[in-house]
Length: 524
Image 1 (cartoon, rainbow, N blue to C red):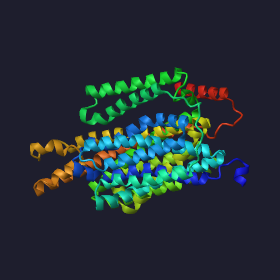
Image 2: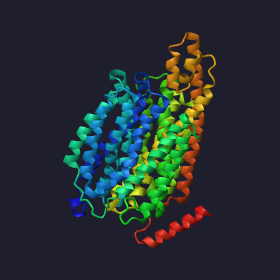
Image 3: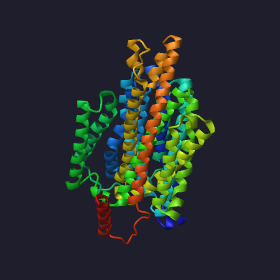
Image 4: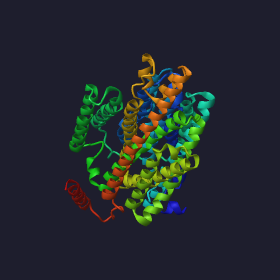
């Protein structure tokens, strides 16, 4: 009754529970796949580049459609949009489980990304509109960010069990019952939030955003194999940059923009978006490399590899809900900076085989990594959502998720590309191998070890030693580069992220003037 007296939705905490289940679907899918990658290499013969596309193909489609999906949710209703996304995701997860080649799996994963794009932003949009009181909304977002760690925890564990007993295809089919249960709960519990006629449709903007991201990410993923100076790679980079500029110009001048670029005049919005992009750049790439390190270098089973990833999830679940309390006491800037310092220190440790092969120390470092991510992502998410009007919550959520997923895709693409290029170089000429095996043995650590198993014992042992040494060398180099990326996020957050939300009395013109000063600082 007290809730009703002050205008609060009495079902809001049950709604949050259902929304957390929905985002768990996405979290489980991302981490469960990482555990299955070595099995996919063995069963489908996927190359190193194809592995990147299996991971990044979903993320590219997902990131490209987030803004469109968020806009459609604002315009036509978030509850229906969420139900559609869950159903679509479940259907194409079932089809992915039936793939018989890397190409089929890449296509199915891309189509799963369509469903994911309608799920993730809609959950945060519904949450923002359901929790109308600012302090309570910040706590709910902290829980939402922390519970995303449940998917990261359940994914590797479930993936290890499923791969060992039922094969890699089961890691996709498991999404079907989860999505079915989520659809029923959404219909029963989640309130129907009125759509807004103030949320415009912008088909041209949607198309331009897709045409900007696809060639840019394609170039980054293909560069290691084709070469950074390859004509297709250079042309794709150029096309992506040009289309990104055209998208920004269109959104600035159209009467009904899908993404109002004026949002970026608020440093609370723009600095938070930049910080979360760079942070998830490191998260996705580190997980991509870490699962291969566990199975290919340390020789762990998929189940053990999954178990060893769970400390990251536990850290996320601890750090996310604690972050709002820290923000209330010390401010957003300090909490985010503290989290990023932890993440950078942990990534530096990731590059050490001596440290990460230690069972106890490795668990501790991965827990700290997740804790740092949790206390970083919750405050910046609240900054993004709290800086926008409620009727644009869908687009705001889409921006938050686009930055995460684009950062993640870029992380897998860029750091994965850097890793592969360094691995190829570290493998050397392989003069001790017969000519037909040399090129294939340099492709990836997975193909190297597979070929070693078919060679005479002495040559096989030499190839395994060379491949593992090359992997560790490339890993050290890549994680060192990753540390510099995290330090860049720290610089952005410390310089431009406001310590506190602006007071309600501050008018829009004053906020624009504050941004102008910040821009002058950058230029100067």
